[in-house]
Image 1: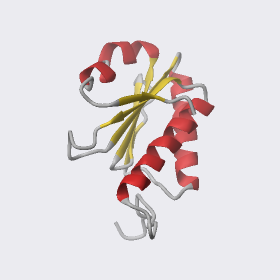
Image 2: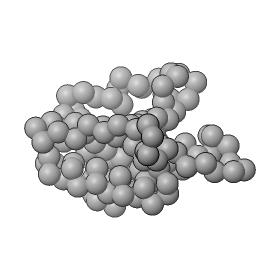
Image 3: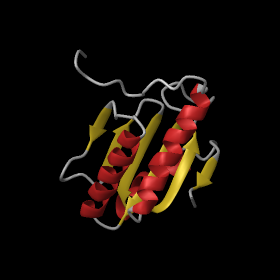
Length: 131
C-alpha cells in the first residue's frame, strides 16, 4: 500500500459514527445531485461487521449510473474519502463503491428491481434521502 492515500482521512475529535454518517450523507447528496432516484440509506450498524451504511440509488440508464458514480467519487474525495475498491464495469447495471464502512450501490432501475437490496435488508433502519 505504499504511496496510496488512506481510505479515510483522520478527523480528530470526531467519533467513528459521526464520520461514517457524514460519509453516507455525502454519498447520498452526490447521488441526488446527479438525479439519482429514490436514494436510500440503509443503517447496518449492529447488524453486520463489514459496513455501517449502504447507500442505494438508481438511474434509468447505464450512462447515468456511471455519471452518478463519478459525482460520488468526486464529492467524497473533496472530503478526504477514497474508495477502497470500486466496481464500475461498462456492461454492468450495478456499480459499487466500497468506502469500508459505507458501501454505495448504484443500479439501473431494472437492476434495482431485480436485486431488491432494500427488501433484503428490510429489518435494518432505512431512510429515504431528501437532503
